[in-house]
Structures are given as structure tokens and as C-alpha cells.
Length: 278
Image (cartoon, rainbow, N blue to C red; front, side, top):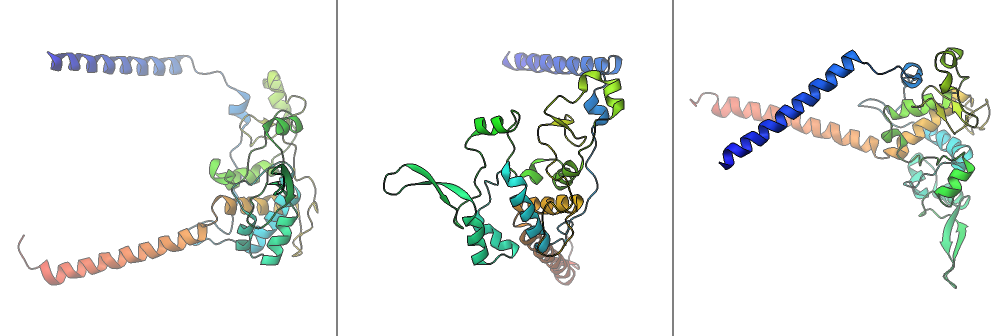
């Protein structure tokens, strides 16, 4: 009896699932969803290449330092790097003294050792990059009710992350007349900014990189908007995966070992077991 009951229950759920799928497919075919501005005008990220791309890719330390400079002078006013410590910057080629100087240039939360009260103090290499806002309420108040995302893992958190960041930074433009004509309700509201690489086309962040020379590179590289966008995108690849090079090196070592083990196993088979009947 229990077996028959379980079969009937399973059959009921199977029929219900098939019915739901069939009804959904029929509705989708006969009543397709109305086109939206987002679906029609949203663009996939631009094609862009970085030194760390590919199986043999390695970080360009100079570019990472330039990208950090862009973050420090432009992005850090709104965005945090809460998963990155100042001491991690040594991996970019900064000396111990330079790391200490960079850390001291930031103000981090602290505690008065005498009273136990909260205060602020200059950063040290062991500190992590501080948030530019005390809390989300302060962040929303300063950014048109939007909370700027932490950038530590942004290139891993977004589809085609590095290309997405680069495209977003270089993608600000005037809203197309065709969009407003076809979708009048999709006109960019006051306080928002049109960017076709953003999911819903309008975002609270104004274009952060606006002019050539906005950042003065110490290595003499010309700081065009495109160059700055590439550099900070490369830097954010590193913040999201600082052990990228080591992982690739380990991967090639493992593949080499597996290849060697395969050849050794085949040779062992040929010399020991090939002539024996199985």
C-alpha cells in the first residue's frame, strides 16, 4: 500500500511539473514579454586585454601601481577596499617605507588606550583600507541614496568583471534620443547618470574619470581616461585575486606532474603488463 501511495505522489508531482513547464512555455511563445529599454540598449562589456590574462599571464607591477594611484586619488573617496591590508601593497613593488607612508595617509578607526573611547588614528601597514563612510546611512546621504559597493572583489563579483569595470568607467554618454523616443518612461531621472554598460542603464555614480591628466603618473605614462580606466581595472583584478600568478604557476606544475605520471604509467604498462593476458 505504501509503495502504491508513493508512486501516486511521485506521479502527481511529475504531472504538476510537466503542466507548469508546458503552460509557461506556451505563455512565453504566445505572449512574449514586452520589450524593455534595458533589454534593448544594455551593452555587453567592451573587449579589453590585461597582462594577467591567459594561462601564462602575469601582473604588470607598474600598471598595478598606476591603478592603485587612480584608486587612491579618485575611487577611495566613495569606495572601500575592506579585504585589502596596506601591507599587501608590498606585492605591487612598494618598499616597506612606502607602504608605511601610504598607510599613514589614511585615517582608520581606533581606540584610545587610556579611556577606551573610540577615536581615529593614522593607518599602519597591518590595517585594512578604511571605508570612506561611517555607515550605510552616511553613504546614502552622500550618494543620492545609493551605497557605493566595496571594490575588493568587484572583478570576481561581476560577469566579465575586469571588462565590466573598464567599460563602465569609459561608457558614460548622453542618453540616446532613440531610447527616450521609444521608451519615454525610461528617461534618465535627475541625479542619475546614463551608462549603457550598467544593468538598468542609470546609476547614481557620476563619471569618476573625466579628463586627461586627472591623475599624474610618476612613471611618465600619459594619463588618458582610457589608460586610467585600464590601470584601475588591472589593480582591481589584483585585489580580487592577489595570488593569481601563484595559482597559475601551481597549475602548470600539477599539469606537468600529471603528464609525467601518465607517461610513466604507460611505459610501466608496456614493459610489465602488455604481454600478459587479462
